[in-house]
Image (tube, rainbow, N blue to C red):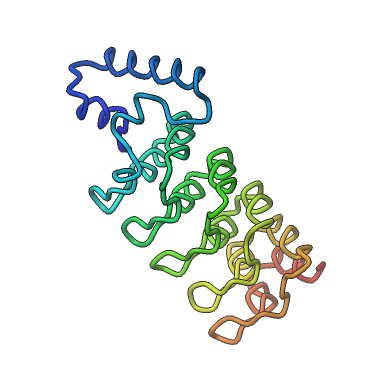
Length: 212
């Protein structure tokens, strides 16, 4: 796991974890005084000119902070003018992809609140975050993303999120998606398969599909 605190400490020339923690306290104090602006500590290292700088694996500060699940720093970074929440890292993963991969609902909520967030961005494997959540059986995440995602978006091999849920046997996800107003229950993947074709191999899944 990437140590973002360590990165900041290194840049500041700090010699110990204790000193880094003291810097963190200063950041929180500044936030209390000026809640609508980035803290002095964050301002020291990031500006509108540097916030989207790519490091190893094309990761930005936001990517690393999401990976480390550092909610406080995410709040700070999102206040910086010019931050690109849709910037892609290696394999065309966005910060939202990393948050969904970690099944972190709170971070996803923060990112979805950003006005220009692109929810349906697909990575190098043509997977959107909605596809990921359905494939992994993340019920809370699917409910959250369903409000802003294209539920019929085509992913790898022509699979929709519903195709993936059926393939993986996620009965609860099938129930959630089947009730979406715009869901296409008859969509076919690149092999001409509907969800019924895929479900026929698994009895529990088949029962869920037939109950739609």
